[in-house]
Amino acid sequence: MKCINWNVEWAPPGRERGARIREKITSLSADVLCLTECRQGLVAMEHIIEPGADYGYGETDRRKVSLFSRTAWSQVDTFGSEALPGGRFVSGVTRGVRFVGICIPWSGAHVSSGLRNRRRWQDHLAYIEGLQKILSGYNVNKEPICILGDFNQRVPGERQPKVVYEALKKSFSRYSIATAGLLDEDEKLLIDHVAVSSGLTVSAIEIIPKSDRQNVRLTDHSGICFTLN
Image 1 (spheres, helix red, strand yellow):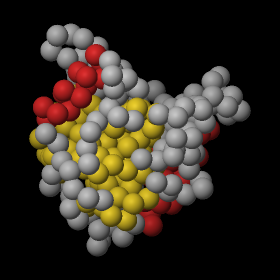
Image 2: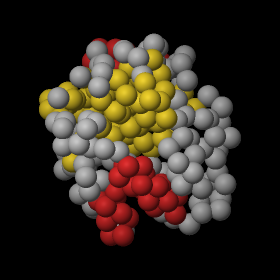
Image 3: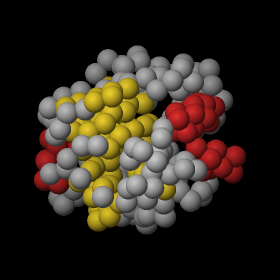
């Protein structure tokens, strides 16, 4: 399967930036998309999994993470667990693979904006700890699993606190982060990643740049397009 993972920074569907992102996604002809920070209506694909709108910032047409597929989803989960900060988890099975779309909170989530009742990295660590329990509950010997989305950490660890990076590694101890060490067009480590269980491999990884060929800025994240084998 050909897959895309991209944070599109709330691109408005009806404006030029949204149209250019949509054009880029269409040109790549992917089978499965994971889009983070995506407004509803940006992409027209028949089979969509979305979480609830409430991730603490009071928006109604914005989704922190969504999964799109050309084929139908089954075993859909838009909640994860009560341990996760809300609105940041989706999962479903298509073509025999379980996809898990995630958007791990950034270090300053709800610190100086939103609910304003958190410490730096608090929501991030809470999410990783909750995600670890979910991922450890999957039977990786019987079910191929692909986890993708905005991890909000560089891999391997760079500037984040050691305890934060170690928590991420522990959460993904049964999975391989295929995008570890990859650099974007600015020679910076990615923060949008894809991880797979032992039954899957990732190849033909293409970096989707933050700007298009006309040097028009699309988003603040480099995306990835890859083949899932």
